[in-house]
Length: 294
Image (cartoon, rainbow, N blue to C red):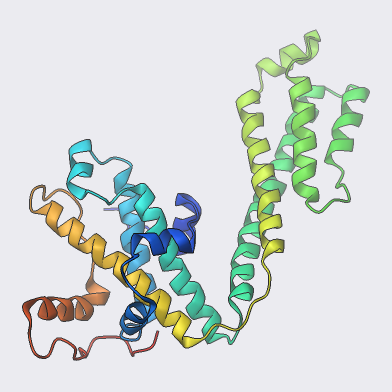
């Protein structure tokens, strides 16, 4: 059996798309900040983030192949709902990291976006170099084409030079792919470059350039307080409670629907179960729970 993938909230949000605080609030509009903070104080953020990343990553994979009748059983749980829940979970993790470093949320978010920009930039640089080699082969040493390729490859003095160079090479590729010269036509026949491949290079260039702009656009804010961490922990665990309930109810009809994993949060859900039964000690802490306050 292959090892289970390791999921991160940052990767899941990148895959599903960003959400907004207003979207998260709308899903939970009947609850107040005090409700969330009270919940957040009783759970540890690192453990929460780890469990949510694993559950949301596995669910995102499963949703791609889920049958229509299974999706009907899940009700509100969909890829769009998961997008908001995963984003809220990442907010919990981001706020915690910033609080631990005594940094602002802006600084933490900027670091995340800079890392994403660097990763996309490295991918764009590799693509730029590969495309240049491919185009030089197509050009066959024809001076006019070689000059155009070299000019496009040269790093321009812009805010996103690698991306702009890759876009310029894509423009040259478009021209070479439609050139009717017999030699170029023959070399094209032995080459895997086509308009679809050029389109993917162009999309990568645009994504890398946008990532740089996103990183630069993050403005500094005030340092993150513990109450802000607790707030987002409470929001994140509330989304997860909704998911656990939905999955368990759906599995009563179709046991092939994946079960939620609550190993790292078993103390939390034992408390919730006692509270639902009305037990007197429902508010007490379990020995395996993380320390309170994020």
